[in-house]
Amino acid sequence: MSENKTKSHQELNAPQDRNNKQQELDTQKEQDEQIRETGQLTLDQNKRKHRIELLTIIGEVEGHDSAPSQSKTTKYEHVLPKLALIEDDKDVDGLLILLNTVGGDVEAGLAIAEMIASLSIPTVSLVLGGGHSIGVPMAVSADYSFAVPSATMVIHPVRSSGMFIGVAQSYRNIEKIQDRITGFIAAHSGTTQERLEELMLDTSQLVKDVGTMLEGREAVKEGLINEIGGIREALARLHQMIEEKEAADKKGM
Image 1 (cartoon, helix red, strand yellow):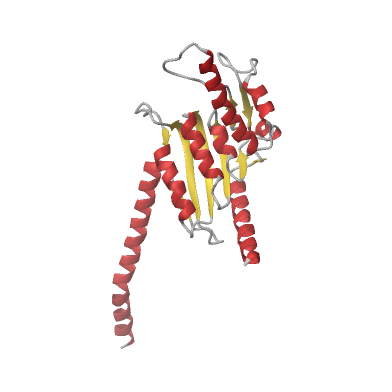
Image 2 (cartoon, rainbow, N blue to C red):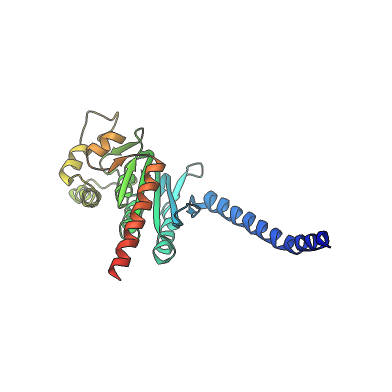
């Protein structure tokens, strides 16, 4: 009799177990697809039960014009709606941004940086490999920033491609674009606009170019990045910031 009861219980649970397993497979498939298409993922398996959105800025930041098909790109038309969704989702606790970018379109990069800077949830960035050119504003746009020791960040003057009219107005237009970039970086980091311009105009470092390449520790020394660290330190800091915000919200109530 006991054996029959046990067998009956197992038979009843079998459909539920299959459903749970199918749900896990569907979730894994959805996550794999999301990583493949946009480089984005939700991190929610941590012991603190925080829901963290992961955003990757990889390769070239693509603007209004499409990059060559063989190039790895971050498309701003994917990133901006995702950031809006994150801000609107009451269940998202924080955002982690991973950067390994050569830079790209100035307007698209600044748009992403401004969106990150205006989020109400805690944000942490981590520079891996490179955070060059327009990648610098995106790195400093987070509430707190990390860089691995081997990371590099290149600061150089604005470049222009395509037709260029040789008049004073063209120079002033580029100067205004450059001021927007340096002004944003200075407002969201520990360096000044004047120091950034000095680094931009250095002629002693880059071959066939003007500017400065900073390694991880140098970027921290210059005040661009808050701290040297990797994924462990970045996630630990983000969890801490989330808990501090939760405590502040409870106190405010």
